[in-house]
Length: 443
Ligand code: ZN
Image (tube, rainbow, N blue to C red; front, side):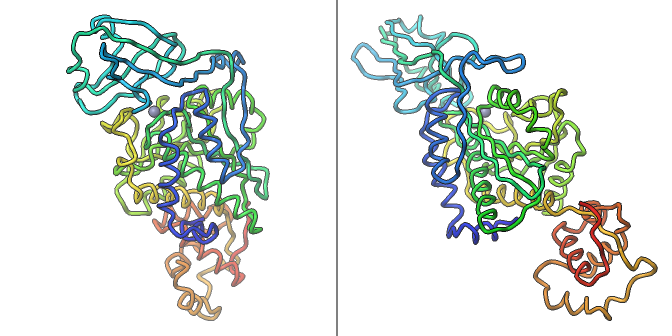
């Protein structure tokens, strides 16, 4: 699994442009944890991947939670006495506090003021706020504009509905040759925010297209891949409550989010800390030789909180660039299309593919000629290395694989110990297997 292979198999000339187009189409949609925005988002994804869309009725119990009423919004504004929209939902959906109850009243600035939210430290950005699970309403605006609002009689309208409906999520499963599964999940519940939610959605969609194309091309893969596009927290909780049997097959998982800012790539470990997904991700980030950060698990953040709760304790980590709350644009209108860099998004996609490649190809081998080093020249291995060159196998990798393959150590163990790239170790093992010096033991 690699960017080059993905590009070739999908026949995509400009992968960056492909990702960018998807971001641009999804960006204007007013998403929330329920409602039409999630459906519209999934409908766009369904143009390229056959997602199954699930609707779970309001009031449905999910462990300690209940699926909330569905929220939809058509328009919202604050008009001054001259009839001008001084705050306008049509200009940015961030202007309305998510899940606001309907409002239609006239108010003085003093009465309205407690319902207005701004960011004094970033006076040109609109904050993103929501009032899930409590009946409230409000508007968000640039602090600079808030300060300029004169005393007046304002007409305040939020044309929303909060009513029994459903929670929507999308799911796609692409089978592998075994019953074991990898879960890739992205949240789909933020309105016009780009790095936070749209980058995870777009990378995950590309990965799904790739896995589907591999299946269509008859290329076997060890794992089945399950893609989940769900609202954060209540979405994953609801999914888990309906999929307790499914997760018995789950061997590795990644939460994909915040993949397009200019910061270093971060991997946040699963609660287990040393699951294969943790080791694979850490190896890929280290082997790249670029600045990166590995964070230990904490019960905060995205849906890894739910997947790693003690009743499940699944091997699910989180891949991101700069983590939540650690960049000023987080949850503001500053997290927009310009904030996301295509080169960083592609780098994140590439790292993701490398991690999946380790999962797919990690295996344990036995050296069939373990008493002293076998004579490599006689078997044409040096010639093969010179001929292939490009596939990454090299003499050091050959020597490490021969030395370490006692039937218990895996290729990832060898890559970690040798500090060689997994792909080089894997290529060396493939060459040695061809030369009958190595025999696969597991899986
Ligand atoms: Zn967020």
